[in-house]
Structures are given as structure tokens and as C-alpha cells.
Length: 123
Ligand SMILES: [Zn+2]
Image (cartoon, rainbow, N blue to C red; front, side, top):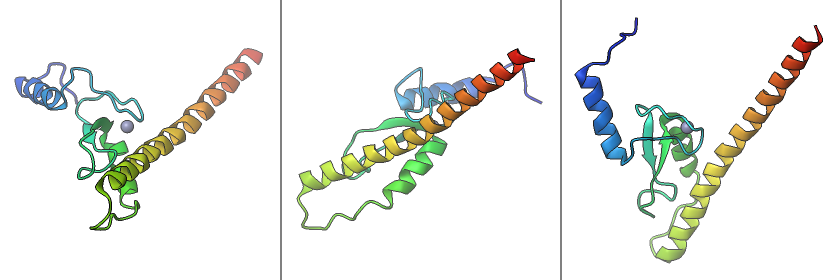
């Protein structure tokens, strides 16, 4: 059973996490999850390619990081700038693909609820 009061340790963990994330209001850029305990930092272009980080939940982070494994490898003699831009574009395309999945899911859910509300009114 969940306790009604939070421990000092809980509050310390929360403040440490928020400090590391650099915000008091962390939110997943993909699905909107705002539970600080699951928010992580993701490098859309890959850690080695670009320093930009975004906040995503652990679930979305696993999906995005797994998708990055399918990006083409950069050859050792490749142009660094072009490779960085290419990985950046692929990383954001991955994010848009995950967002698109959520948009379909959310849209279908809203329509199903609209239909259920209509059926309830017709009774
Ligand atoms: Zn998420």
C-alpha cells in the first residue's frame, strides 16, 4: 500500500533528479509523461555526433535508442559535419515517427470515446 507521506529520501531523490535534468517540470517530448522518476536525457543525433539532449520518458528513450541502431554507420574518413547533420536528421525523423504513432493512437481513442458518448446519449 502506498504511503500518504513522502520520505525525506524521496524528496532528496526528486530534487537530485530535477537538478540533473535542469528543470522543475520535466516532460517527455514524445508522449508527454511528466513523472520525474522516468524522465531521461536522449541525444537525437547520437551521443558522439551532437551534444543536443531532449527529455523523454524511459519507454520512449528505449524506442528511440533502439531505432538509432538501424542508422547507417559513419565511415572513419567521412566528412564530420555531413555525418553529424545526417545523424541529426535521422534522430529527429525517429522522434517524428514515434510521435506519429501516438497521434494515430490518440486520434482513434478520441473518436472511440466520441462514439461511446453518442451511444450513451441515444439510450
Ligand atoms: Zn514518453
